[in-house]
Image (cartoon, rainbow, N blue to C red):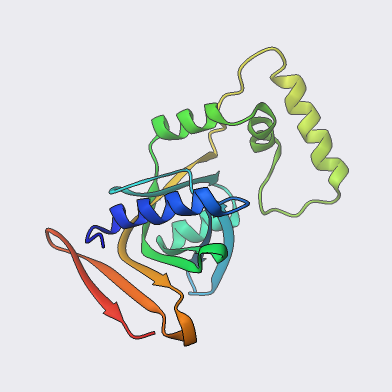
Length: 192
């Protein structure tokens, strides 16, 4: 077994990519506001490595406001077909503009236009309003590249705790934990 949590993540993630029918990179992101009230939603992992786990979003959304108020967050990957999950806790920071620009450029044109058209998490009177805004963005950027909106970019969760959970018969599950320590990681087990 790997004693490096990132190597173990890579192994499990590769197995999920080979077996999960939809979005093996889907992860639950839990944040809380300044009063400590939690919220959770699904986002997509778009990059990972020893420096952390990256996703992209509107930086004026509800989640972005919660991150600004309290940058501590948690991620959860659940791969039902593999009977595994990974919990990751740490602090969120902005991904660089270079990373955000590069990822934005890789998105489909409609996704790029949608980032301009959406006031994510804000009230919407009706679907027609959003569709009209989308059509406006199509016209605005017709015939040219769609630049990344200034309010849209990446976040990186730098982990300080990672737990690998493997289902076992009779609820005798295996739980391996890694905690960041000075100079590396400590490893241990938890009771199921």
